[in-house]
Image (cartoon, rainbow, N blue to C red; front, top):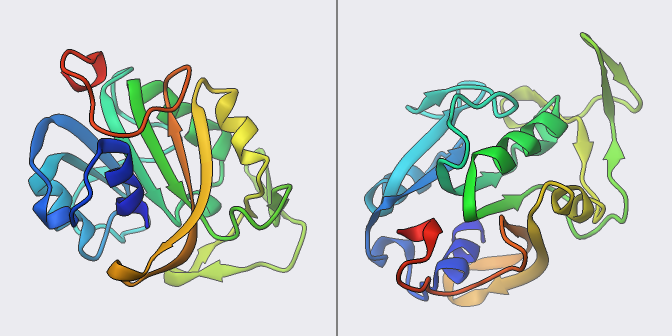
Length: 202
């Protein structure tokens, strides 16, 4: 669903493998794996964060402290990562900082769209992790710090993003019903092909 949402943003209605390459656009993926990196590399200038050793190759960095210039990224894709980020306040701020005007942040995390308020399982207090609930782990034995609620929309808006939270399915692509959050560094969300001369895509 993450890549399908990206296609909606950019105006592509065909599978990723058939997208017209956009080498002038820089895409950052937070821990891309499986088939994504192979296809995204052919469509964009692709950067992949290495997170807990999952990514085969990429940029060794913490999403809460990105070694990237301000306004240097056109698109950030993040799937099932932010629930594991200890300092998500810094992580979201870093993404907003690195995004170019008009750039997209497409986020998928468990339970989004199902909870009204974020449910914190582990609270980071200085160097200490304080467990507010029995610990939960996902693949690779990665600790879950929180399950996001719909209040994440306001958090991202406060960082200057226009945000849409949607739920859908794509039976033709065998995509079951899922929720995705799309944020754009703009005063209002714009989906579809970019106009010639648009600063974010020139």
